[in-house]
Length: 216
Image 1 (cartoon, rainbow, N blue to C red):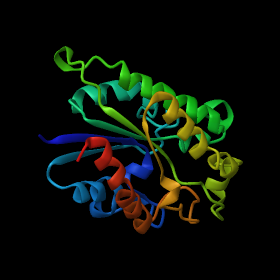
Image 2 (image 1 turned 90 degrees about the horizontal axis):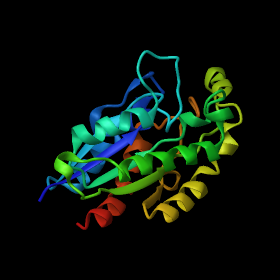
Image 3 (image 1 turned 45 degrees about the vertical axis):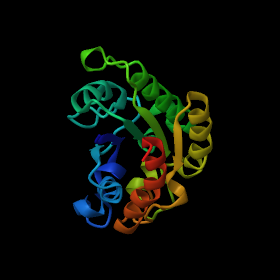
Image 4 (image 1 turned 180 degrees about the horizontal axis):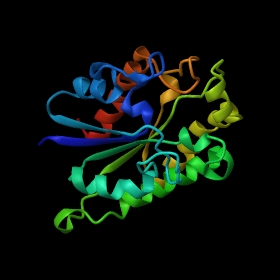
């Protein structure tokens, strides 16, 4: 039976390319790399949105970046699902969002998203719940880009706490966990996003964890 995986994330999942402020080629985005590694018995759905937060409002755009508000609809439109991968929190570290941009606020947001998946009313009353994999995003690094440096002031240190906090949350909520920073690093071009090599590395790094959680 074909397994379905939903990758719920932000610009790191969408494939933002800091070098040209565009988008990586589809073959260089980590959900595509994961799909190819897993083969035809798995459908990997990429649901990335630039600027998406876990649960916090960002009114600077004309689309909804609040991950908690859009997740239930996406769960329903893409269901049934066998695994939901959540990789969010980087945008929560922006100054002015999430009560000041703290790692603990991002962790609380991911906890809320896990709850939304667990309590979702699935099609036709199905009681089968998908597995959940929490992915800590790569570390934010120092950058000479004045705009991103100002937007993420203080976030370099905060991002260093995400993996530990997310790991504890995953243990508490009986979710899978993966640290994206163990296989990929942000580009110093803007200090946040991944170049093609590193987003591909993330897709490859996730493969064994996803295989295990899907029972493949």
